[in-house]
Length: 62
Image (tube, rainbow, N blue to C red; front, side):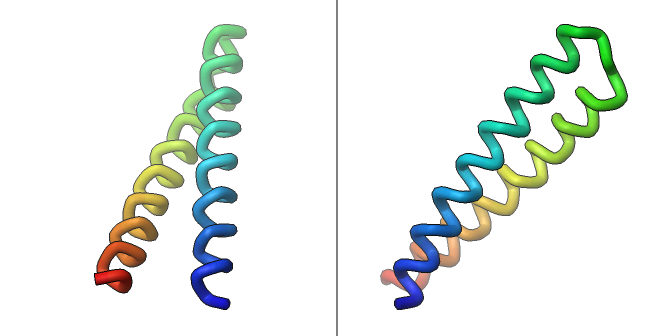
């Protein structure tokens, strides 16, 4: 059961990361810097969180 939840978390994190990076690029191209920088920071936070989740999953499988 827990493995299924981790798979859901991984796909949700990937989706949120893609959405945040897309919003960051679009807003920076529109020269709306405050929203673009905020979205870029949230994208970085999501990437860091997903790497930590992947590391925990790999450690539990071993």
